[in-house]
Length: 241
Image (cartoon, rainbow, N blue to C red; front, side, top):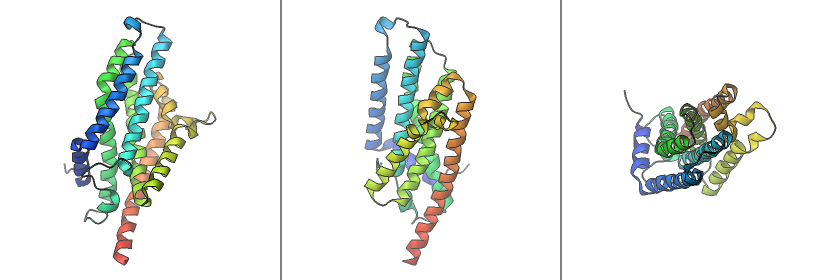
């Protein structure tokens, strides 16, 4: 099986760069603090509802952090040494579809890596709180899908906006709309937000999880197509200049 060349280069940069390692360290440090804060005095048990709430808070914060880190690195807000942006790759001989798919798969693999790094701490919190691991796996799947979707948009934004400020502003607007904006009202669209999607995954709410995964999948498909088209447009503009 042939590995996407864009994916190979991106993962090498994100796995070995000093800025990437610093990001991993900060991410795990925040989760470690949350793990310590979630421990009851002398590890004593509290009411079951309270236990579930604490684990949900931990997983929601973890999900939001992964979504941000994935989208920020994809958009270039967090620049990783050695990783080429889609705009730069437009000058390469790779087809636009290969570049777009490589960037999207990179976001997916990167989010999987972050979930895997956080897994030991997640298991500790779940074990102390007496919570089964199956709902945690479901929450992880929702997190990966959400991070991949917003990461796809981040990669697209990197080709649409040359200004760092404009790119970051649009990315943050997207994150705010996704996390808070869709929670207005009581329609099914609220499950697009991790604030609702993660609890739905933990409680086995198939409808809520289904709405979230369908929405994320549509964003990934549309974003990938738009990114491939944008790379082609950049090439045509360069040739015409």
